[in-house]
Amino acid sequence: MPDLDRHIHFGGAEDVHPDDLGRAAVRNLTTAIDTVLHNNFRWSGAAIGVVGLTLNQDNTRVANGAFITRGDTDLAEYRQTCDQIWPEGPANVTLAIRVSSLNPFTFSSGGLHSDLIPSERFTHSFYDASQGATNTPILGTPSGRGIGEFCLRLVCQPSSTSSGRKGVIIKYTVVLYPASADHLSNSPESAFAGWPGFRIADGHFPLGPTPTTKWQCPIVPLLRPGIPFEEEDNAPSGARLRFAVAAVMRKCCQADISRTVAGLFSKWDRIRISPRDIQDKPPANTWPEHAPVPETEGEYTQIMCQIKYPA
Image 1 (cartoon, rainbow, N blue to C red):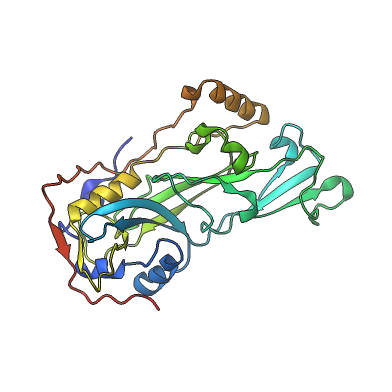
Image 2 (cartoon, rainbow, N blue to C red):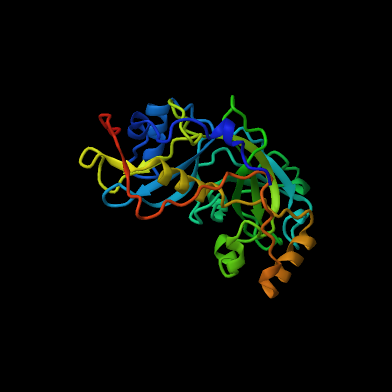
């Protein structure tokens, strides 16, 4: 598990430039993100990953952090016959899914694997080859034919393709689980990235946004201040920000991918009987560890720019 190269990605000033901090301020870590990325960092709208940090009430410390994915993908449509997804699924019916955007994925675990996202958040259809309808979707979800529900998860990790020119690149895998998110919530182990599933897509996206002035972190985290910077123009020290970013980025692993329906459900049964059998495989590449800042070191960074929130 090699770390990302510190000399390439983590050199520069001790603190992030105040202008970059000001441009990274967001009202919230949901709807406001796209506007800030577009207006302040020239985001094209293509798939991207960011780290969002919520600050405490006086903006001097980080309260919590989260990984966030936004933007459009170039993933091809995934097609598979239902007998390869559900134990009693028909071989003549095909499921087609298109994950055209990373916006539906949420990451409440604090790391780089998403929550289980219900199927209705994604464009999908069923096609019945026995009726000559290979290009005409069946209206609704076929019921009583062995076809069940499904949900998706995004599992991410730093990629070996990261470089000084490209920046930090994230590799991701879209995993399908042949059960509803509500059903899987009855198995606490399904909250882990190592819960087995089927791979339906792989891809890469950049981690951003990129700072205009190099500092000891390859990105500028988006900041949701406890009190608007216009009223209290403090921000956590560079050391605190780096530690918070690392805490998010180091919580990652590889997906556990099954190849057959029988093999997948057998794994699920084993894990439910013996939860320790779940395997969170270490990532191929990791974010370097950063030492926590002692509470006695309460220094903060003064923001010297004029903050202007998006309208």
